[in-house]
Image (tube, rainbow, N blue to C red; front, top):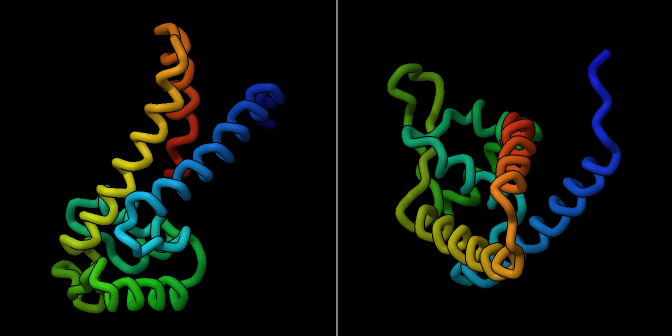
Length: 147
C-alpha cells in the first residue's frame, strides 16, 4: 500500500485546480477569438501543441479520454473549424496523425497568453519565497503524469 497524502495538501491542490479551471474558462472567453472551445477541444489544442509531430489518433484518444469514435468525431469537428489537420501517419499507413493548423496554434497561443496574464495578475499580489516556488514545482512534478 502506498503512502497517504496529507489531507491539507490535497485540499490546497484541489482549491488550486478549481481556481485554475475558472481562470482557464475566463482565458478561453478572453483569448479564444470567439471560438470558445469546449473542455475536450481545449484539451486537444493543448496536447497537440505539445507534440511537434502531431499525434496518432490512438494517442489523441488516450490524451483526451473517452472512446476512439468520440475522439474521431472531435477531431473531425475541429478539422471542419480549421483548428486541426489530419494526414496519414508515415510510419503506419493504417493510422492517421492529427496536427494543429496555424489557426489552431494561434487560438491555443491566445488562450494560453490570456491565462498567463490572469495568473500573473493574481500571483503578483504574492511575495513567494524560493522555498514556496520549489514546493509548488515539487507538487506540479508529482502530478505531471496527468498532463
